[in-house]
Structures are given as structure tokens and as C-alpha cells.
Image (cartoon, rainbow, N blue to C red; front, side, top):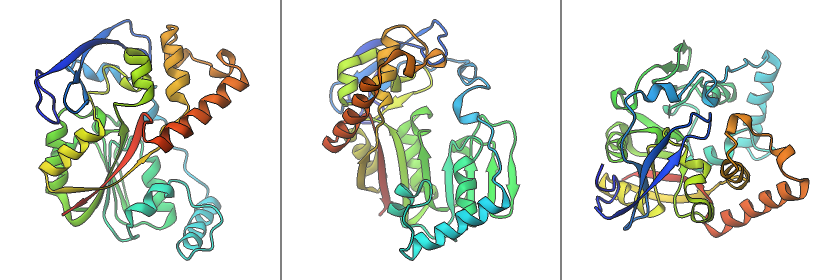
Amino acid sequence: MNKCPACHCKKSSKFSVPEMMFGMNQSFLYSHCHNCGSIWIDSIPESIDKFYPKNYYSFNKFEEDSALSKNLKKWRFKMHKIGFSIKAPQYFDWIDKLEVGVDDSIADIGCGDGILLKQLKYCGFQNLFGFDPFIDNETIISGLKIKKLPFEEISGFFDCIMFHHSFEHLKSPLRVFEKIAQILRSNGKALIRTPVSGSVVWEEEKEYWFQLDAPRHLFIPSVKGMQILAEKNGLELCSIVFDSLDTQFSISELYKRGIPLVKQDREKEFSKRELSNFVKRAEEVNRKGIGDQAAFYFRKM
């Protein structure tokens, strides 16, 4: 790929990134756009499936809640909606911003085992859909359907479409936004949570920044890149919330030491003070808008 997938600029800097999640001893060539700052892999491996083994984190088996736990979560959601909840239900720090109702059709792209969708179902949401081309088993129950299907092949229309760290795994960001615009209802909402370039840790660590995650992450946008993609497809970028974690610093440092993610023990490698400083620094870069991941909220105009 000789031009930026977001802004189509042909000027870029190339660099090599090692596969470090599993320590597979392979490196991959990436490009960094001189115009918008987005990052992309130059050539997608033909056998990309082998980089998603059974122990890949999003395939973790979901443990069904007990009947009591389900009822408690539904009760807590009702209390939250009327303003009496002390603590919001799990995941509702971003659900509230989407302003979706329990009857709205919600699609989670790259849902894995459907952990998030099942939690929403416990709260009372009744029109939930999940899509993931890498899952082994599909789920079809009342109010919830999880299908083994690539994003490009999805049909139907939705009130809300979500990508929770799946957007960066898709081949063509422009086609992704075209598809979002196609299947999103008028005034519908979209949420894309993804790593972003231009962060402090990217500038400091470069090829050891753990969110590059070669070769699984095919495209990592900048804020400018996301704005360009949205405007091309009639989507309004309503809000950006930086939600990066302390792991951006600790895991990247251990990558630099040559330790794959699956072999890392951060509590052994760092002191309590160092771990605490990572947390404080993550909070600081989020406040400044220079963390390494963010939630992008869109509306179809």
C-alpha cells in the first residue's frame, strides 16, 4: 500500500515492527503518514489467521452469570436510568454517551465471544447483534444474535454500531466507514474505540509501542485521519474521549526488553511505585488528549 488509507497522502516514513504478543520472531513493515499521521501495515500476511490463535484474548470463554446476578444487573441498570445508581453498570461510561434505548438495534463488530452484548442483555437490551469472522460458535437466543461473519458481509440496518478495538484489525478503513454509513440508520450513532497515533508513548517508543500489535493491527488512525474518514462518508464526529491505560507504558517498556506479552509479569518487573506512576501518567496524557487510545463518537448526518 503506497498511500495513506485515510488521507491518500503518498509521503510516509517506513519502519519495522516485531510481533511481540506471542513472540513469533517475525517483523512487519509499517508506514507513518507525513500528512495526517496515521499508521498502516504495508502488506497484510496471507495467513493472517495464524496470528489469532485460540489463546488470543478476545476468544476468552464467557462465563454465564447466575440468575441472581442477572437480576441484580437489570435492577442496577433501572436505578441508573432514573438517577439513583451510585455506580453505573459495567460498560456504561460510553453507553450513556451513545444515548441508546433498550429497544434500539445495536451491532458490536468484532464481538468475540459476545461478553459485552451479554452484559447489555442482562441489563434489559433486547435488540443485540454481534459479528466476528474468527469465532467458533454462533449464538442465537431471544434478543441476541452473534454471527460468524466479516463486517463487509453484514446486511440490515442498525441504530448503533460499535467497534471496541476491532476497527484497527480491518483491512480498509475507508470501506469500513462506507459500510457504517450504509447500514446505520439516519441519526444513528457509531462508536469506534481504537488506538491512535500521535500519542506520547508512540513518539517515545516507536516500533516498541505495544498498540502497534503487528501484524494484527492493520491501520492505526490519527485524530485527523478519523475526521477525514468521517467527513468523506457523511458522518459527524461528535466527541472524542481519550481512555488510554497504564499498560501503554509498562507493556511497551517490556517489549523493548524483548519480553512477549504472554510471558510478562508486570508486578515482578516493576516496583509498586513504578506501576503507580504509570497509572498517574496515563491519567495525565488522557487529560491532555495525547493518550494512545480513544473513543470516537459519530452521528450519521
